[in-house]
Length: 143
Image (cartoon, rainbow, N blue to C red; front, top):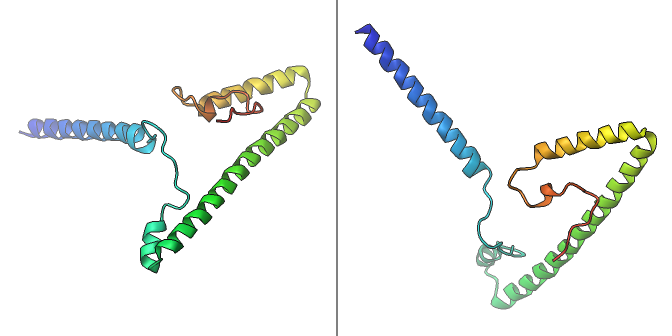
């Protein structure tokens, strides 16, 4: 009787462990790293306008004016985002140049190899986006 009990406990533990592992893998792959599927959707400049409009009892005219304000602001933010990326590339290029000036050719080659290995660790195998670019100083194509 005790052997059956021990066997039942062991089987139960194995099943529970297996289900936990499966749930962990599923959660990691499908819940933690969600990526939008299908065509990219446009982000609205101010997605909370409707609830705010309702709470503040905004008129249709006020809502239209706010939409325009948020649209202009969103356009300015997109411009700023592009400028920041350009400036960051410039700073990275300057940093690389200064570091390369201190290192010997062998040290530069070893550092470049270390950098490539680190990028490979961070880069998902199926990614075709930002992380997949190996030369960070190369400007991205704009749409």
